[in-house]
Image (cartoon, rainbow, N blue to C red; front, side, top):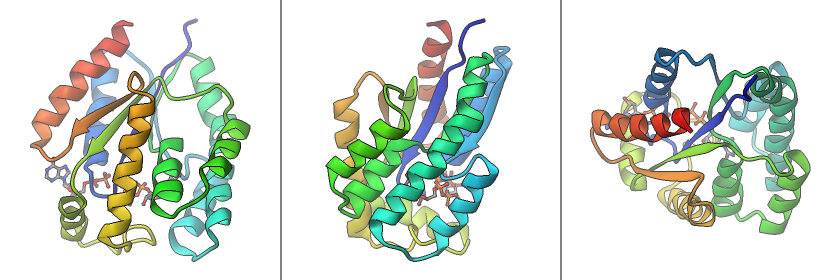
Length: 206
Ligand SMILES: Nc1ncnc2c1ncn2[C@@H]1O[C@H](COP(=O)(O)OP(=O)(O)O)[C@@H](O)[C@H]1O
Ligand SMILES: Cc1cn([C@H]2C[C@H](O)[C@@H](COP(=O)(O)OP(=O)(O)O)O2)c(=O)[nH]c1=O
């Protein structure tokens, strides 16, 4: 049986990932692919409990980075690896590129420490495809505000933080241009969906 594929969605808060993830799942299912949806931090009982802490409890930066990777280790072991091995695809809202962008880029975690954690938790493993939703932080912030939901610890950060997060995402994309596809997220949802359909169709056919 062919191994499943792992697709991650990335971008600053309010980039518009959520609705496009739903459309992508529908697209894959319409092609007969069995696909699981997940998210980080989260995706497992342990991971969801860590998510509660990470999103709401103030903590030291290195603690934050280690907990992100602890949740990820559990996610890989309990969910992602078994699904891919059984031929199922996994579509995930965020993965390690988010730690590079938020903890290294946004908060200033030493890059060498990120590299150690990443090499420990998933040596040689990366998503087959990452869709990076790129847009100016002020537009994303207006979208987040318009939802009226209570902002979490990350969403409460100021513009400068998201400028750094965005730049780190783009730097990461330059390091892995085959895997990370940058989408202009400051467009109508239908246009973004059309790009995703094209990119995902190529992966299905590959
Ligand atoms: N392309 C778009 N143009 C304008 N508004 C959008 C677009 N995509 C999403 N939104 C809106 O922006 C808000 C945040 O979108 P969401 O998908 O939750 O972002 P994310 O999951 O990346 O944080 C929602 O209210 C959503 O309806
Ligand atoms: C996976 C991950 C997420 N995060 C942050 C980014 C987001 O602000 C937050 C949760 O992500 P997300 O699920 O996108 O938030 P929401 O449900 O509000 O759309 O966690 C990191 O800082 N580092 C990471 O490694």
